Amino acid sequence: MKEIDITKAIYEEYGRKLLGHLENDVVVVGTGPAGLTVGYYLAKSGMKTAILEKRLSIGGGIWGGAAGWNVITVEDKGILDEIGVAAQKKGDLYVADAVELATALGYKAKKAGAEIFTLIEVEDIILQEDRVKGVVVNSTSIRASGLLVDPFCIAGKYVIDATGHQAELVNMIRRKKPDFHPGQLQEGFMDVERAETGVVEKAGEIFHGLYVAGMSVCSVFNPPRMGPIFGGMLKSGKKVAELIRDRI
Ligand code: 48H
Image (cartoon, rainbow, N blue to C red; front, top):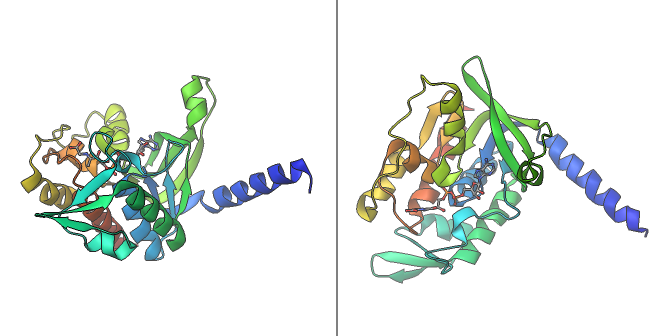
């Protein structure tokens, strides 16, 4: 074995992954609880799915639990049971380990057939004939360097904004299309009784070809925020996967 054999193996394998996912049924942006859940269910139902993450690691806000204490809560442990994450009952809630949830969701999504790309940042949207058709991406390190290096593109019949509080893709459309008024563009005040229903109810298609799941739903449509209770993130991801599966 030579040193350059390692480089060659990695470069060829990454090239294979990327070339295999330049065209997709669905491009999911963000690997928080919502993005990984939607990616898992889409891939499980046979959709060709690419999941893009600008950070080095997957999991988004899962890792931090509350204030960095890496434990999360849910009201209903159905999805946790399905992906094999242990949950203990505490009053009206279940608690689960954040590390277990982040790694299990990533593992299940990957094993179901989704391809996950990290250090890839979506910087723009491909929007033609009034429909979202993919994303414009660049290496996160190039973006952070401030160098003016042109991006590349990843196409999808559908794109999902699972970018969390920033609702980045929705805001990209808003900046370029002043006539696009999707909602209040503010998350609601904290209210854990109403939050899960609100986020799941409003998760769906927001612009032709673009769906929202997870916290980006709250940031656009104003349902209450909920702190580190993640059921709404998981369930809105599952709902969006089912909506798209029924369309393809
Ligand atoms: C590529 C991007 C880009 C980009 C962002 O923040 P997340 O965990 O989002 P959700 O919606 O899955 O979960 C929200 C949850 O973590 C949370 O914050 C809750 C429940 N808060 C409640 C409250 O009251 O505060 O993950 C989003 C992911 C992150 O990993 C980002 O790095 C990634 O999206 N991302 N990836 N290109 N342009 N923007």
